[in-house]
Image (cartoon, rainbow, N blue to C red; front, side):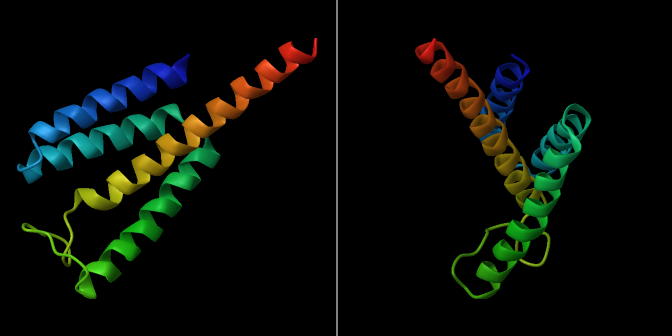
Length: 115
């Protein structure tokens, strides 16, 4: 049940971010608050996924922007916004939790079908 509440809360915050997307300060505040809440709630392995995805996708984003694939209208950190690596980390964390939830419930369904 915690995953559902957490997922809905993150969806609500993402909708809020759509309205404040042009204001970099609000995006940073929202991403930092979501990240700190995520770090408090999760286990160590999920934190590791978050940190690795921030590093990997942040470097990938930097590489693609430097290569000229795309640009941001208001970059703050070597061509990308400050909040972008945090968003990649949170997206990876959400996907990890959702897939774990699907695995958990699919195993329950299989067990019930066998019985």
